[in-house]
Image (tube, rainbow, N blue to C red):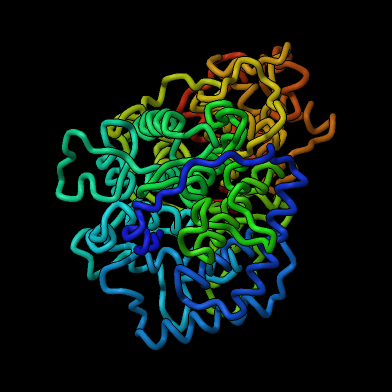
Length: 557
């Protein structure tokens, strides 16, 4: 979020591109992360509230999984509380990225940023006008920070314009340049001028913020344009030329963006002349675990080290199938005594037996409704899911309750409903040949498969565009219910007794009968109908009702 201003005085000293001496493997990456963590603990003994020697060190260490004493994080929390108390909860009058950075660090370290010395640090980000005042950095980092812990945007009584996630997304999209990327100033006055050039740093950061919203066509299209640009801008060493020279931090922002999007670091689009983004960053590495700003040593090596550290941590987490750097639902909670609400809603709700990856999804669009569901039996279910971004309308005004649902769409709805972070797999481990990288549903389908919610249809196919049937939907819903902590297994007599009331129960596939019985027994499906109609296409309204009732039973609404 912060560039070393000294670089503006040194553009004439621009370093020539250099080539990393090797291609990184897992062992090399692990060693680099471990060495950087050791360097960080040695040089940042008492992290402050600062963009260097503060939050980024905390984020890198906390997300690395390296051994760090709890006392280290506790000391940081106390420093933050003292600082917040001293400034009366106002971290900065105009630079609201200060709030975002501290929110990220506290969340990564296992603390609640909504209860710091009696102040809710997320409250500032409820003010849209003040957040965007400093430029594109404001909405980018507000989204990243709020999404890191699935924090709802609080009501800000002092705001001229109450912020929403929609407004922040729209602001980022509005400022995309015609070449496909972003820079610090384009669109600041409401206009993007011809000839504007994108900066790889800002483009990477914008993609990090938009990563969780790839199910939205406008966001997906903007992302694809930006990825194409970043691939074109990458040089033969796997690096980027920004602010006058090749530097390590630009590569870090692009690498983190790929990891947030679930794109492997060795994606062919981002390997040039045999050099990946990780290879390039490792080319700046010094023997003591630190990293240079440029190849010839220009710049603040502490800042460069902190950024390179968390960039490599992001790559390591992706390679190991863990939550991404900024999806912190898996962060270890270290202190639940900060306030009665210190545990996030995702921690406080849900059944005790749920999979630890299942999270409560907060309301982000309260009051959302559609003109064509008024009086519909499933209107409450549709509105509840839409308010949480679990299900979308066909347009802003129309839901199309009687339309069908594809298998890919249903996989996405269930993954979002359970609050699951999408899973990236390396080494060609994706099982479905008809689900291609670049498809909007790619990571949803493979996440549903990873957690055992959805399987294929045979011959290494998922049939993503196929319309989902009622019995297929019941099976996926029952599996999701099991993941959420419900007992979805019925014995043979219970299955028979439950289904025997329906005239056509024998037409249900053997593999679906247990799931159908569970759904009827728990009220997920309406048992007042005479027939199951297992092979009939499920409608959007029916799907909403099934997911809504399942989440309600699992205490996830």
